[in-house]
Image (cartoon, rainbow, N blue to C red):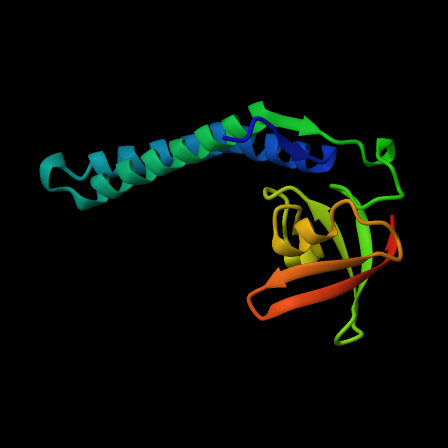
Length: 156
């Protein structure tokens, strides 16, 4: 089990806001659905009531998971980290040595990873291959398609 979940300050605030909305607005909405379903009569044969109660259970589970994640959260200040090696929250410009394609990624925790935004997890194969490397070094990444080599062009 992982002791800490590393998050940026921005992501922590987003998660805290989401949790607050879930606990207030979200719970109220589900309570209204349950009350409406209950008003339809016999609960033993009321599929709408059963569905609303199941939704409530899943919703409460999501709240619990979010609370657990926030309890484990450790904020990382990217300005306090070294710029000479690739680390979590570093933005890295790399070149695929086979295709010559240049890509820029930010290395983040699993919870923040979003490939469409250029954020990859430090625990992904590419993230693990890049960690600790310096500008000019070659990172070898084992991918399903085979070994891929990336040259580190820039670390921000």
